[in-house]
Image 1 (cartoon, rainbow, N blue to C red):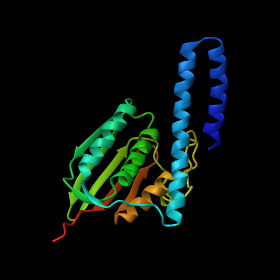
Image 2 (image 1 turned 180 degrees about the vertical axis):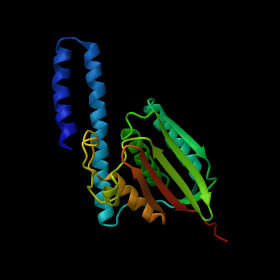
Image 3 (image 1 turned 180 degrees about the horizontal axis):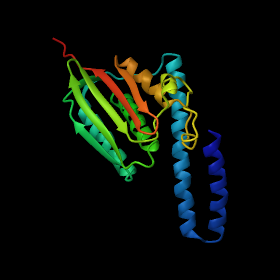
Amino acid sequence: MKAPLTTLTLLSSRLRKKLTENDSFMAEQMLIRMEGQVRTLTCLINDLLDVSKIQVGRLDYAKEPFDLDALINEIVETAQLTSPGHRLMIHGASHATISGDWDKLGQVFINLLSNAIKYSPQADHVDISLETVQDGAFVRIQDAGIGIPKERQDRLFERFYRVDTSKQNDVPGLGLGLYIAHEIIKHHGGEIMVSSEEGKGSIFSVSLPLHVSAT
């Protein structure tokens, strides 16, 4: 959390100087960068709050049926606007109604999609696949990025764990996103898995049980 705070301090100092010099263009650029750091800091704080709630069993969940495809399409559409450098392509459809918390599950898929984009800086696309098999709906997010060493994949969903490689050190984070995602999916009776090959990319798969109507 020190990194965005340090950057904000530096940017605010430079902004004050540019305003004194009446350099409105550079001042605007400084403000844009500051807003980005504030968003980063907000995400870090929210992750820490979620972890604290998970640890004491107080992370609240809504439970209502909703269209899984609608959730994924909304998230992908928003992510595409903020990540024009990658083509986010949805394949198939689950046609599934699931029971759970729209916002919490949305948080999971936002995290997975954001990771796919961040860890594939040289690629130009991310694939999102949807399907239903028997009594479960599946969402798979596949990138063509740097991948994850096989010997480190078993610990990905541990709290505060980050894959320590030179290729990933430039990406900020606390190692909480996947831990939180795992806990949310587990609460919904589902499962999250990873398949990855270093240098070729990763596939994160989420399975969720279908909503069963009361009779």
